[in-house]
Image 1 (cartoon, helix red, strand yellow):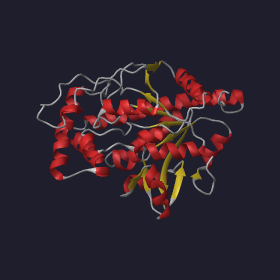
Image 2 (tube, helix red, strand yellow; image 1 turned 135 degrees about the horizontal axis):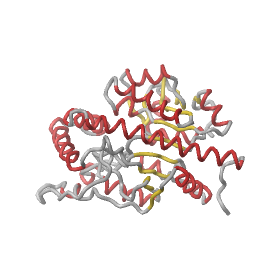
Image 3 (cartoon, one colour; image 1 turned 30 degrees about the vertical axis):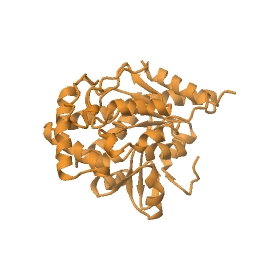
Length: 335
C-alpha cells in the first residue's frame, strides 16, 4: 500500500478496507469534465448511492490542493463539480501534487491510486483508447498502458464512442489486458450496446481506415458477478499485473442506435477540426457536441450506463470481499 503520508484515504474507506468489506473506486473526471452542470453533481451522488445500495462503500478519487484523496466527501465532490479544475492522468500526478494543485483523476490515475490504497474494483463510463486518425495524431490514451500494469477489475461500457474501438481493443490485446463481456460476446460501443458494420469513408479521405471496424466479437464473457470475481482471482494467482476489463453494455432502454451515434460523431469531429480543438480539450468538446446534437439522448445513455456499471462493480466487489473474508488473505500468486 502507498504510505499514508502520500495520499489521504477517508476514514470510511479505510475502515472498510481494514475490515475486508467491499469498496468501489469511482473516477472524478466524469464529474468535472464528462457531464454538464448540474447533472454532473447529481450523477456523482447517484453513483455513490448506487454503490451503497449494492452493499459496498464508494470511494470517489480526486486531487485537492496537492493531496490525492481516496474517498472524497460530499463537499469535496461538489467542489470538483462546480469549479474549473484540470484533469490528471498518471503522468500528471506528480506535477499536480508538486504544484499543490487540484484536479479530477482520469481512469489511469484513478486505478493507480485505488490500487495503492488497496481497492481492487473500479467503475467508470467508458475507457480512453486509440483516437480516430491516430496515424496522423499519435493520440493514444494513457488508460491503456496503466490498465496493463494495475491489477484491478474495471467495469465499463467499452471505450468512449468517439474513439477507434477496433484499434483500442487490439491495443489492449497487445498489452495482454483481458476484456470480458458481461452477458455479451460483443464489445459494447458505449452509447450503443454493440457496434454495426459501417462502410469505410471514401478512399480519398485519409482517415478512411477509422470506420468499418466497429463490430467486434469478444473472446471471453461472464454471466454473473461471481464469474467475474473468479476470473480476477485466477489472474491474481497467476501473478498477472494487468487489469481485468469488464465490458457491460448500456441498458437497453437508454441505448442508442450505433449508426445514429456515428453520424453525430462525424459532425462533432468536423466542428472540432474547424475550431482547432485537440489534445485534452477534444474529448469534453466532442461529448458536449453529442449531447447538444442528440437532444440530450447521449447524456441519458451516459448516466444510465455509468449507474449500471457502478452497481455491477459493487456486486463484484461484494463477491471478492466475501471470499477474502473466508480466506483471511488475498489470493497469492501460484508457484
